[in-house]
Image (cartoon, rainbow, N blue to C red; front, side, top):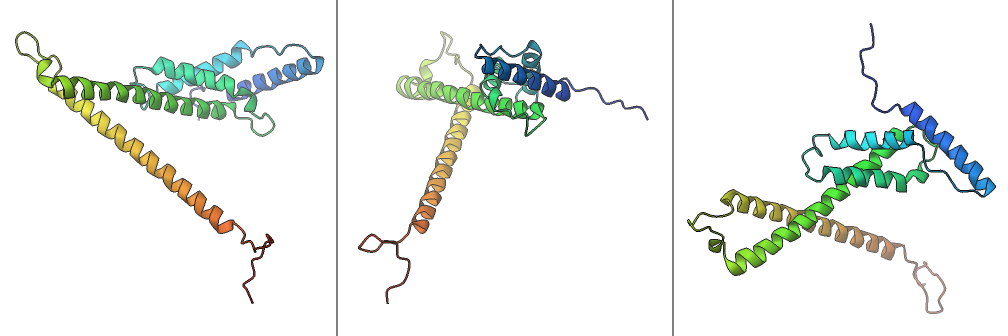
Length: 200
């Protein structure tokens, strides 16, 4: 039966081979004390293709700042490129996909925080101090639909709940770490010697 599977948009073997060749050139240049060359266009294109393709996944496609996500992913790949160990793995596709994935998540978290700050200001300054009734035109029509207010409140509640859960998890982790530190701390006698024996 003929294999009808489409070829992957990045050839993992060729990608790995290109990285190995680049590393060899870098090692030679370092030994000679000359400048390390920039990575090849092919390596850069592979990283870009991974970032663009990942950004089209359903969980990322609808974000308005998708281009910034792609830029962050590529930038992070360049930052951590040297950490890819060619002797431990031959799968650069998985390595850089993971880097880009977490770069996307960081960008989303950053943008959500900016959005929350904007909504918080809007809610505290405009709605609380000025009043929603002032946001009307000359015909007494609300300038912003009611659904938008509901969406803002829903987003803020969801964001605050998420931040609260993160804070509680961090506190629980710190408490657990402190507990183990206390448990493993040796008992000291008055003279300063470690003494775990019960007194006679």
